[in-house]
View 1: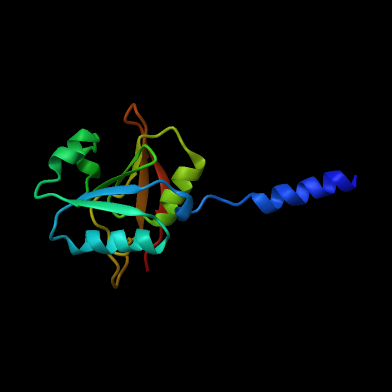
View 2: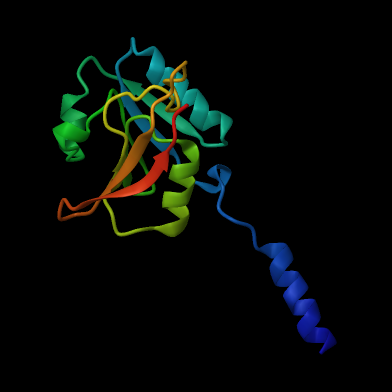
Length: 147
């Protein structure tokens, strides 16, 4: 019985939930002049992610490469752990995506909702993070309440 208890303590001590620091590299493609993209990148870094950013005059080819539906598009596109992350997705949602590994191609915050990471300001909007699977089926991954 003592050995079983010791084993349980060892397993509990070794287990820890996935965090941004455990996550693979986030690669971001954005315009060189986009301030909100830089603020979103800082949000990810503050959460512990390692980020590599590439500035492009035209991000449309990247969005096409990763099959970002035009109606779900935002100002920047990223990839992490084999997933597409489009727009101002909160770091906690990316951690949840990487931990739960759903069968989706990516998660998306269409447009630039006020109150999302990188778009902070008064009168925050309620917005959704959408998940899209390989068949194009969409669902709500998370909802973030505004003011």
